[in-house]
Picture 1 (tube, rainbow, N blue to C red):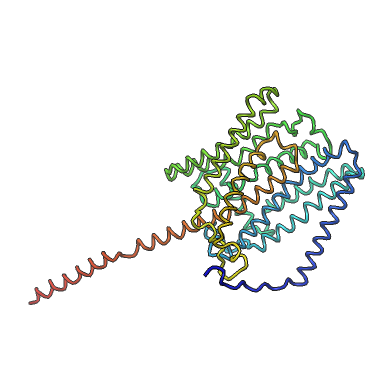
Picture 2 (cartoon, rainbow, N blue to C red; picture 1 turned 180 degrees about the vertical axis):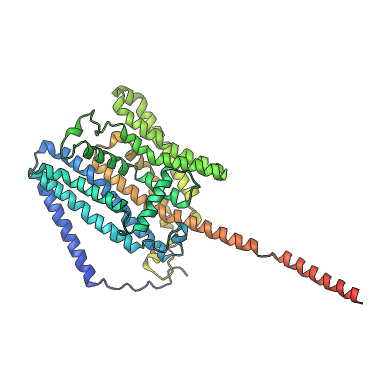
Length: 430
């Protein structure tokens, strides 16, 4: 009976945990205070440009940290429910648990704002060269950790991740669920990849802590052709995955899925054209095309989510935990969850077009907020996509088991044949 179960008792947090939370909040306050004071020391005419540049280096890493936190929540929910995500993703027994995921996210959440605070403080106090070294040092350390061949920092999980990324970039083999699952997540992070490319570009060209990139023809500026190319890359990878799946399965739905990802291409490149055509051409011709292509991409993607990626008949079963829980009583079987998922997915699919458009990216705080909201949309998408895949796996397994077992008619026929053989043998003996 729904709502009759008693929620499991929730233990009090340990004193060590409470101390850690207090220290975390104190650290966050210090970073905000030092960063704000440093920004206020700058001249008003350079303040916005400098914040725009500083935000470029650090906002993609903050988004990555947010995605890792949310992925940990996904794994925690899967562990409480009947969804066996280990089998879905074909993980080794040494895979990271949600606690280890959260531990990694904690370190990234601490390191990135600390580096950003040091960058702001050093630049505002005239130490430009030291300030410029902060994002370079941070990116170098993270890259070394990711690619390190030594048995530290979860080597097996990093190898699994890098191997999957290679399979996404080169879909030369049959596409597995982890391959296109991670590729789908990468489409939500295309803005992150674009910002990472521009950040690395400025580091390589020694434009960190300068405004040389502000020139329109700068190789690392907002008019760079690399911006739309990087934005479109995750969609092209997913497009070729769909073609590979069609080659292997001959299912027409793979071609329809490929068409969905191809609708993002005109959104990205029509937006980039603003910097390469006359203003009147943009307003009268290209902007209407961009709006139409954005609407098509948003609605097609929304349709595919609810029709193909999810099974709406079991939308909230993921929240039926093994043990009674407050979350189960709040979310399982509730109609408001159904309407929230559909409504929020549609709205955020439409706003995602804003993020794909390079000519709208100057309002960096708005774009950051929309990118963070896209991570939240993808976070809730993960629940139902993984559950749908698990249901398909169990249904296939049950079908195979039932196929191996003889039917009632086969058993009756076999019994009849056996009886007839005995009667025939008895007649011969007579």
